[in-house]
Length: 107
Image (cartoon, rainbow, N blue to C red; front, top):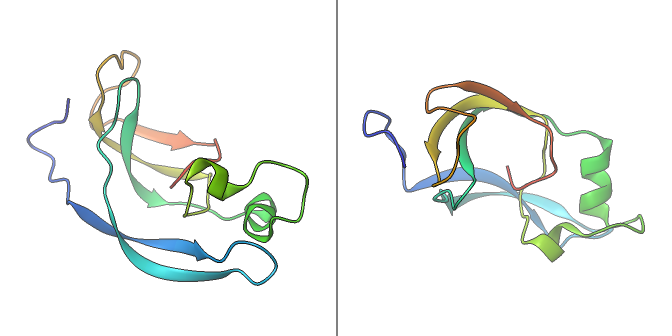
């Protein structure tokens, strides 16, 4: 349930992890912009951060879930931006609202 007044591109540039593990690298890639599913929102990020936990995800050096197990290719979980689209069932947010995010998810 997007807002027709907000232009949402089909693709965007993203810093993606290549070869997760001790020899990981980052590659700037053109990726598809996802369409939010039920209960999800799409945020156009103004900025995001990378912290040491993201390095552990990329290095895969701790006994925890791996980014690739969840299909995550772009690290970062401390972003801020505006909601540009919402999936069905979203009730507590609105398109255009400024939001921050904390969960480790595909940024």
